[in-house]
Amino acid sequence: MKKLGVYAASTLGATAVSMAFFGTGVAAADDYAGQTYGDVSAAISDAGKKAVISTRSGDTLPDDKCVVTNSQSAPWIKGDDFAPVTDTVLVNLNCNAAVASAAKSGNSASSPEGRAALKAAKEDKSGQ
Image (cartoon, rainbow, N blue to C red; front, side, top):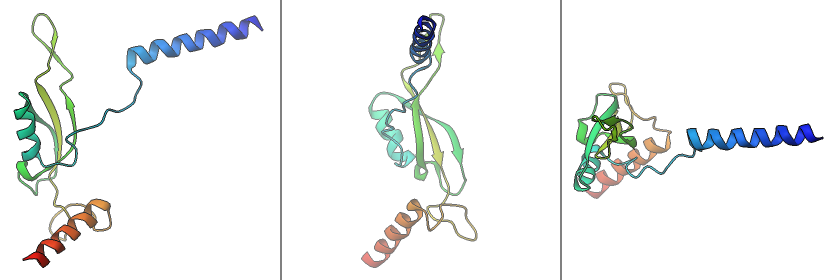
């Protein structure tokens, strides 16, 4: 029975150490996801930082119209003192059309994003 207690304590200790070392794995909220790169880069610039495009999927839209799918602070260090980079935000862009067509890649018309884009286009058209 004493061995079981030692094994349990060892397992708990190893788990605690690995969680402290590697993090808990809980994702932080992404303040910029879902917005256009034009809006996000302006907000990041206003905060005294610079936006850097990390990845880009699709080529239908210009950068300013692309949707930010994910962002994160730069995970690297710089200089002789190995200081963390705190003034750079990496952004991942989706530059596909809002809704796919025969000529352009984009969101499926049956996806939540595609339905929202179709609804917005219909409201835009009926409002003119």
